[in-house]
Amino acid sequence: MAILKNDLQYHPVIDFIYFGCVIGFGMVLMHPVCLGIGLVSAICCTVHFFGWNRAKEGFGFLAVLMVITAVMNPAFSHQGITVITYLPTGNVLTLESVLYGLAAACMLAETLLWFRIMCGILTTDKIVYLFGKGFPVLGLMLSMILGFIPKIQRKFWEIRLAGQAGHQKELDMIAKKYNSGVFPSRIKAGIFIKMCRMRYGTDNLSILITWILEDAVEMADSMKGRGYGIEGRTSFTIYRFTKRDTRKLILLMAEVVYILTGILRGGISWDYYPETAGAGFGGYSVSIYIVYLLMCMASVIETTAESGRLSMTVGK
Image (tube, rainbow, N blue to C red; front, side, top):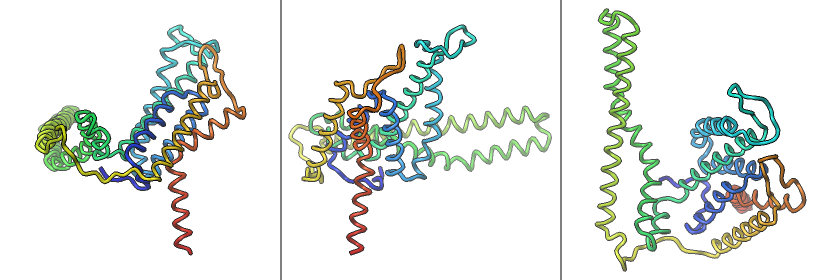
């Protein structure tokens, strides 16, 4: 997996703790302000790490998923006291159910974006380093799963391009038969074209699944042949826990403690049912929002600050 641009290259333990915190808070904090901070920060970090051209590829699917999630909740949940209208089925459509659906959509999108960034930063070698000693089987499985996603995408396009010439030849033959009068109607020709495309897609999927299974077996045999998971086996690693990592860990833990304290004290509490209400913009609540924003945008802030320092150094 390619290293993302603007990656600050912290120790794998720091990366693992950081993403555990932002993903965990993203799934727990349902306050609208926190959801907005988390979603906007996840989008900014995605663009920051992947670049706009790579980042925008998943935004369309994410938007559709958010719309489906937002619509599903008020369609099946009718809790709340603020009635907007009555559905054709006779059930009520409440403001609270609509707002909760929007909140759930933001939470899902935010979580998926953080997972996407995590898969780009926590590469397979970092996963094996984190879990290889204590949980070798788990480390191998996680590294294989995270590594398979980009490999499957690349392999799928290779298979598709390899068979595209033959597929286009079949389509040209069907068009030629239609022009010569073999197919009496456009409908029958269209049916043959759809069957041809369905067979082409099925063949590609079959080849891809076969390759996935073979690759998994080869990787497992390779790791076993290298003695992976054997007691007493040592391995070389390039990762060292530096003072920079220590400072980052202390800052991250301070932010986590402050946010957890705010949650326990009700500083960012929010309820959607039976009535939407919660903490507003008091001084304590605003301080929690700021700390949460700084934690989520830490990578962007640190990279920008480091680029500024380098520019000043070069200018001197």
